[in-house]
Length: 283
Image (cartoon, rainbow, N blue to C red; front, side, top):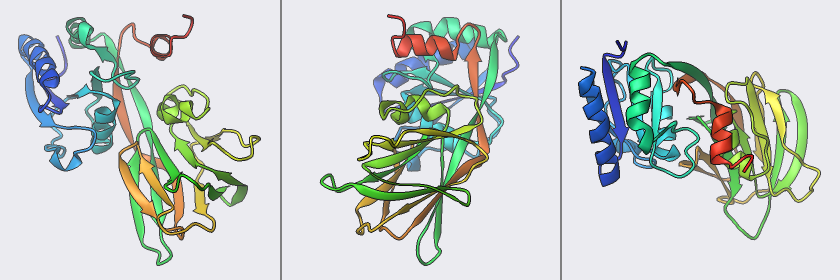
């Protein structure tokens, strides 16, 4: 019998598809005599997400695409309940369950045929010239990107006390291993196994082609400073959703967060099978 006593269903319930899938999952939950609760969540509408201070649920099920999953993961980081994603998006690297596999997948989970996997987050601090600080957590990545499409950014990157490079580019991605299959992959970064203790730095369209991605220990601290940037010439984006305009005077500091997220991995599912399926490896 399952060890889960209460399940939270997270999704944008304004969507008929999400409501239909939530209804199917609720029927399975009822069959196993488990309590359930509904929480509104979408990729962008964080202010409408309710119930995130509730520690009573044992399993958080996110219905939607990777954007919704990222939103819920940031909000529930550090909590004891693991997350499981049901994919209504496109590739769905984070959402492990396909709609056609819902009954089979939940039977396996409630039968105890699953494992949990810990994923790290990054914390970014933005310090302006008055030493005011703003901080965010990222499950996938932090991107400093230009807003003026006709000009490149001048970025100075350091790791710890050591200067690394000055690069002219469209932007730079600092990614967790989980995020290595997202924007970092599209920009030419390597795929990292998601439980590695690592941070990945990937320049976006660097003017000098010898600038390549680099993988660091997650004990590293990354510093990014804009050089000769006009106000509003760049912005910082967290997981593709949280945006902060930069005026060119800030110091961006990125390091591993103290928070982690636990994900459910169903028996028979693996990272390598996801690569074959979602990236068409071997086809």
